[in-house]
Length: 263
Image 1 (cartoon, rainbow, N blue to C red):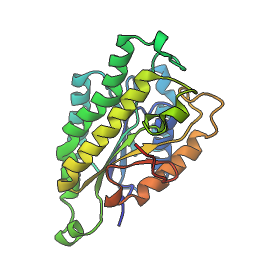
Image 2: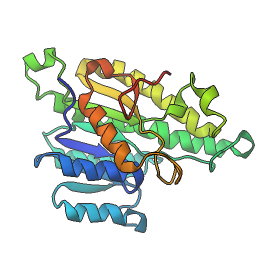
Image 3: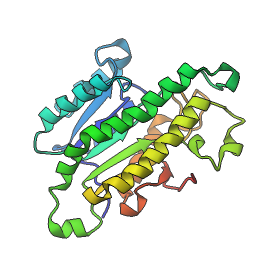
């Protein structure tokens, strides 16, 4: 059996782009008992208007949460707020989608500062690390609903999906580097891949799956207007892949079609 896209779902970076589309499609396709916690830095700001419209379109299905992944206190406050609402239900799916990319592409070495490296790493790696660590009790609670027979099988009640990228691949670096150097982004996503591997090993004893996904080159603020994929196409593909994941996929880097990307 595989991951079921149901229950309590936490999505970061959900006010625009891929994150917003994830919330939209999850709201459309999950059952009545499912609930989506949609996070962004300023839920009441102008850049979150589309997200607020979604919460109105799906009343009672989406809760917006204020979350700044560069601020540990903000992360802790968000986790506490979700914990109070979930209570005994547990967290079924954590999607670490939020990320930053600086300086502006192509971000060559000459334009990249120490500050860029540190800030990108803090948001893209440390943020997901802290979220997984703080949410671990809730993820475990979701798995505790399994019967002994289900625990022996391949059923997954709790999963962490880290949104990564093909340009994190060291093997493919000679192929992808000429298009955009992006030192901070590449290095941070490679670190996120290692975080995925470590947590996949660490959390297997809890029956929690941890997998990294490449969404493709997508038409977003980061991907640009010439990207071949729309957010709808990318998210449709990723959700199909998520729903097909099983224990053998934990600790892997896959693309939106389910293909394995080499480290």
